[in-house]
Image (cartoon, rainbow, N blue to C red; front, side, top):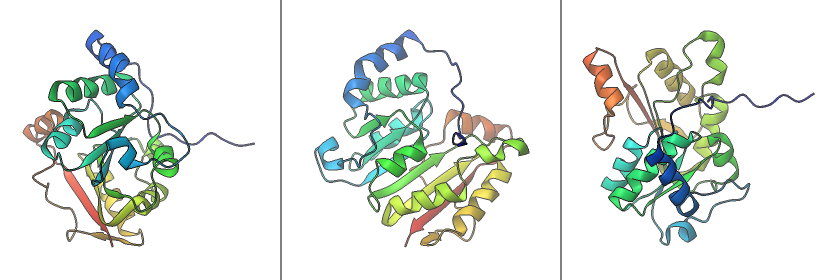
Length: 222
């Protein structure tokens, strides 16, 4: 008997506003990349040769859109499963006229495994993944050894895997997991300072005001 894979997310029933629904319906056919178990051709998708960065779990899209807008020389692929968040991101793409961002609505593990060629990415961003704080749910956490190894194989030499979390115990686990991956090197003695190009989210700013910490873990492919 085979068991279904453990997912790092739950499809929650969030509010899907009319504006998000419109953006999703009108823009996803043009800017969405359907899941298919075959490698993507980045030049065909974006019409150019440029560094490609994958954003795992783009949420409501605020940070993803801002990074894409501030780095027009890079191309971005956002992976997200929640339709309201995708709709929100698509609204931002439309409003800001972004041409360097595409979206895949599917499980990130399967997208990286099946659609992203090995050694092809300039970076992978995993910002504030679900910490699954209860111990019995830790198996659902995305940043496990198998995922870290997969992510490392998708990075080009010099490519960066950047994770940020506001959950200290999870941050320590992430640091331990990534430190054990062959071919990855930490860019800092431990946790890294937040790079200036990673915007602070409203959620993060609120947490800091309440005294919560945020930890960045930044490794590079050797």
